[in-house]
Every structure is written in structure tokens, then in C-alpha cells.
Length: 299
Image (cartoon, rainbow, N blue to C red):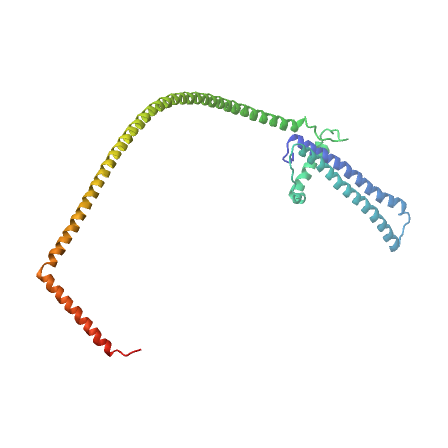
């Protein structure tokens, strides 16, 4: 038996459609046959016809047959569109996107395969029981292959739900462990801060005592330094006064010594000779000035 490569359910649907198409085709062929029969009974009553009469008869028959064939082709195209609409609507309910290859509709090999399938299914010798073809309908969403898809989707969602539950439990355990660890760390931090506070208080008291001792030592040293400085200042002032007295005494002695030396020097022969020479020189200079004055022109 020829097969179309479909499952049993879909193959039965194809058979139902082919049965519907065969019945429509049979009706149209009967209509075409009736057109010829009507022509024979209404026009072919005479034994001889002229060429014009034959042409008129054929033209009328052509118009009738053309109308019937065109109507059948249009109806077949619309019928196919309605069938595709049913299939696409059902697919869209499952969020599926179907695709078709228009070029395959003229594949001679596939067309012959369909013809063999039709011949095998509808020959009188191998004819199957006639199914109800009055109003073929798509299978409801809760029957047939749709139920199988739905069950598979439910199973997949259940498995995913179990995985999410397991993951949620794991995350909850991790969160609980993290909270416990956080509590432990907070307690440890509080204990550490308490110990550190006690240690700080002890260190502060010790540092304060050391600081007070240091300040006292510095204060004592500063007072001692201040006292030493006062004594040194007094000593320096006394030394300064003494030095001034000594300086005055030395200056006085130096002045007396200079006077004595000058007196002794004036009494020496060299001083008297030098004084006489200076006197003579002064006299000579005065004489020269008088002479020079005589030769200067008057204003």
C-alpha cells in the first residue's frame, strides 16, 4: 500500500480530504457531461449543419464548459485556503509556525505518489469502509495528538518545577547557613569590640598616667631651667657692670698714658728739631705765597 510518510491519524485526515475532493470532482465532471448532453438534445436535431452553425454550437459549448471549469478551479482554491486556515489556526493555539514549500506542489514525483495513494485507497477491489465525510472537523484540543503534546508539555513543566524546587531548597539551605555564619561573625565582632574597649580603657588610663608624669617632669625641668637662667642673668649683669668699670678704668689709664707719652715726646730733641723744621717750612710757604701774589693779575 502506498504511504505518504504520515502517522495514521494524519493519513486518515488526508483520505477524508481526498474523498471530499473526489466527490466534488465527480459532481463537476457530471456537470460538464450534462453540458454536452444538453447540447446534443437541444441543438443536434438536424442531420446537416453549416460551418457557421457548427462554429456557433462549439462557441456556446466552450463558454459553458469554461464557466464550469473556472468555477470548479476557483472553488478548489478557496477550499484549500479554508483547509490551510484550519491547520494554521490549530497550530497557532500551540504557538507553532508552519511553513509550506510551494514549489513542491508541482513536483511530478510527489504528484504521482499521491495518485498511487489515491488509487490504492479508492479502488473498488481494495476499498475501505466509508467514513463519515459530511462535516470533517479538526480534532479537539483535548483529543488525539494534541493531548499527547499537552501531556509532554505538562511532564516537561513538572520536571522543570521539580528542578526549581530542588534549587530553591539548596538556595534556602545556603541562605540559612549564610545567616548562621553572619550571626556568629556578629557575635564574634561584638566580643572583639568589647575586649578592645576594655583594652582601650586600660591603655587610656596607663597613657594618661604616663602623660601626667611626663608633664610633671617637663614642668620641673622648665622651672629648673628658668631658675638657672635667672641666676645666669644676674651673674651676667654683675659681670657686665664689672666689665664696664674695668673699661672706664682702662680708658682713663690709656688717656693718662697718652698724655704722658706726648709730654715726654715734646721734651725730646727730635721733637724740637722737627718742630723748628716745620716752622721754617711754614715761613717759607708764606713767603712764596706773597711773591706769587705779586705776579697774579688784578681782576
